[in-house]
Length: 412
Image 1 (cartoon, rainbow, N blue to C red):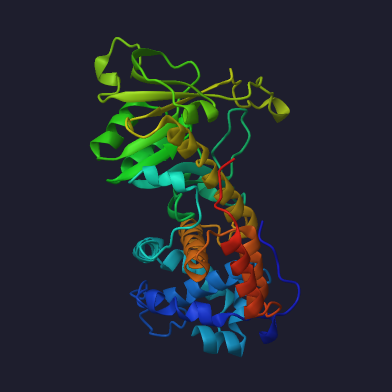
Image 2: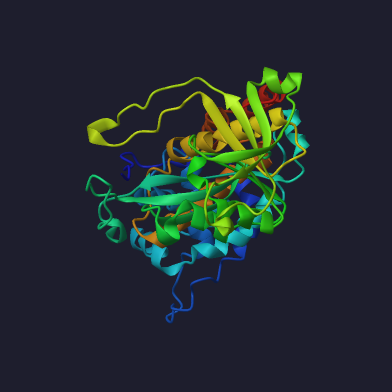
């Protein structure tokens, strides 16, 4: 789970410190956090130091563990350029108990206000609200995560994992919030319940069919926001108004656009309390495929993708396009876990996991602020090579110039 650095670090292995200097004023406000228990006054590792070392680890593939962070802190260049002291493994381990990860949230919000839009399909400007994809992902942890030891999957297997509920800004190509819960997806950790607690005004939430819930739709509308989400294939609805399909809509594979009354139930309060629209897109049918070792798999598709929304004036083909961009959050999860290395946890404790998660969000935002592009594997790699001293600044700029010449990204 946690990789070990087998070779000692040398100062020449690390570069690119000027980017971290821009972050230091923001982290400086954390300096005195968690120091109340230090009665002897001999603390040398502060919260801003710890976060800086975590960010250094996220951007440098040579640093993949607490031991690697400790070795990096011994380098004079790291101490001078990043303003961190030489620290011990024990102090780094203690950090997950001492520091409050929620103090990083205001910094994330401040950085999110500075993010720059990245190249996307220009038709998305039809939606004036903040286009936000929402979903959750599991991060597997070490078996010694005692809080998760008792969790079981449906087939009775241990489930040592955390669920990260994520809000992803589609236009800027970065996450703006991640909230950690247990992996059960029930009660307080249920994805719909977590989204309901975090709803904001003037957002357009994009989600898959696991979020299909009439009361959630009502709550989104009550916050003066909107939604575009997949409905279950067996959803019951009554067509109130059939809308004509334009040539653009037909070209996008749309076979029906209608205002409907959703939910054929005897409980009127359980139905959507606002006008609702369904856009039906023809897709490739597929049969249900059995999961490995008897586990369940995704349901079959009948060739009709049902998308529900309260956006009545946006063209049908744009509604379908918005839902296609929901996959950008899946691409981010792959980047988050496999490229940033967040499959590997520096700490086995909830606070330590939250600090690493928030620092990873900051890392994604820094890539956007430094480059003006969404964080991708190629961009992360060239920055990593630069930080290691193997790529020049001119080569980083050449990579960014190539991205600038690329056409806008379209969801597939």
